[in-house]
Image (cartoon, protein in one colour):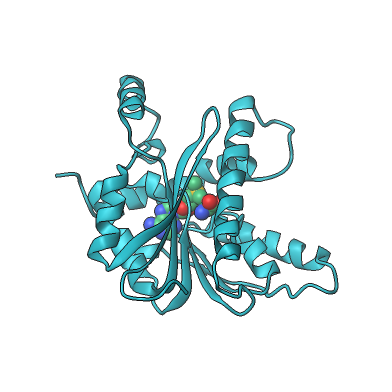
Length: 244
Ligand code: SAM
């Protein structure tokens, strides 16, 4: 069985408070100085995932203004901030204190520069691992986080996130296919410097399985790929409810 428990999580937390924070803040930022070609490509792919998530939510019957959203693993706030700008009531949380304070800083900047007419609603920020999130939200989003966790841990995370959501659950993950399996094996011949930089790809069937176990089904799918970035984006809804 793949290891569950503290090992991966503590390594991930430490990474995103140090070298991982610097690396990802740069990738998710807008400056181009000191950003290499691969990082720019990943920036572009990630921006497409964020845009796809936003349009899924805008296309849903939900009225974003006033909708409660939990962004689990919010990073620097790439999705939380545009949602806040549309008046959503956002909880932005992340396991990394460094990420949360960067997200907070960027949200303040966004609020300060928002046109007077917009209904920017400052998110609440919390340093917290998503496993310990509580409460109920209309929408739960979790983008590009599962890549840091092995299969069983990722599935448990999905079940927990589903238990927090009433109407929508948006999850992105790096898809596991034969080709990527191959690339990953090749990668393992040259292991990265730490466990936290390891990437876990997930089979769509595993993600759907976890959703099904939680009483959810996938209503919409997206696939985003650039040269170095690949993600599947699932929009899930509760099986028992209508589409809103
Ligand atoms: N969701 C953001 C986005 O798409 O812009 C950030 C993605 S970044 C690749 C992964 C983020 O997940 C990091 O900010 C990291 O600190 C956070 N993270 C990793 N494990 C987590 C956990 N167990 N609970 C909450 N956040 C976690």
